[in-house]
Length: 198
Image (tube, rainbow, N blue to C red; front, side, top):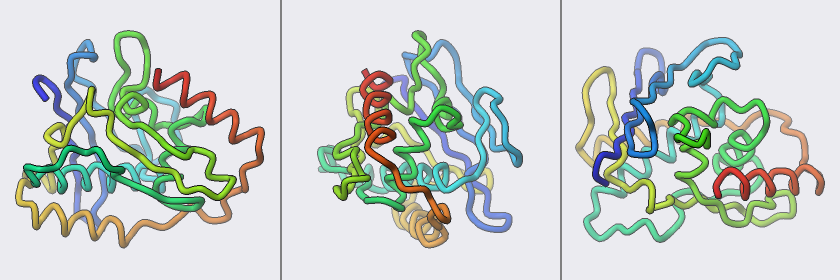
């Protein structure tokens, strides 16, 4: 998409991990840059390497891999999963009050999370057994939006992108002893999704 670009910067020093994200798109007033931090913080555009940010990195790599197919229109989900999955980690981290994922792609001119606008969720009531599905909002982002860098070099080879994605998926672990969501909490998440993604 024209004038829309999200660069994901990874390091392989110990294991492949995301350490910086830059976002440029018409809905942003300026280039948005988010950096990984080691300790908990409420600092704007700072994120920890958690199960949720790890899962988001996998999702973005999947998009980059699928973008190499000229016939791909992203009409199908880019991630699907139930409780304890990468999809649920993104869903609940993105919409809880203290999540650092909200501004990882910046906030638009109206103060709305670009990440919340870039993703669409189906079957959000994971607590009741149905897996959630995550789709791209293709009105805002597309496959060509995401650019992947590893140790300072942009990776465009589909095979290398696929291998990176596989390694990240294999190293992902669900958050231990995640509390079960009750009906009230699930409804709260549902209301936040409708408000933030509007």
